[in-house]
Length: 146
Image (tube, rainbow, N blue to C red; front, side, top):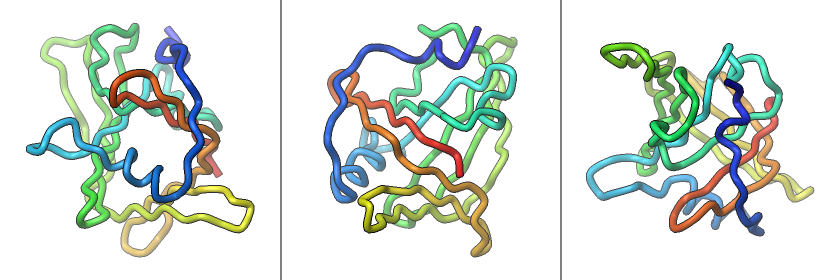
């Protein structure tokens, strides 16, 4: 198993900050929040510089036992990060970061960055490399950890 087990063919799309924010915070239904997920096999989420996140959190079709999930709340710009274990009975989730704030910034390059903050301290910072459309409402973002 590897973190590449999530990668599938898709169509790269052009995006700006406004379009990215719309996709980034899109909820699968009105009663939930936006989610982005990646495989965390052998702690890839914490070790790798490049991370592929997906907004369709159903991982049953992938060869991945451990996942990292970003839960995003657009109106408050808050987030939680959770580590999930699907291959164990019963499956379980550990919340690794409680509510903090998410900031998306654009510099003059133009490049977009995602900052995850807790108590006004930047915990994680990523540069967005690409946004790929995988299907109806399904996207992949490729990030570089900074």
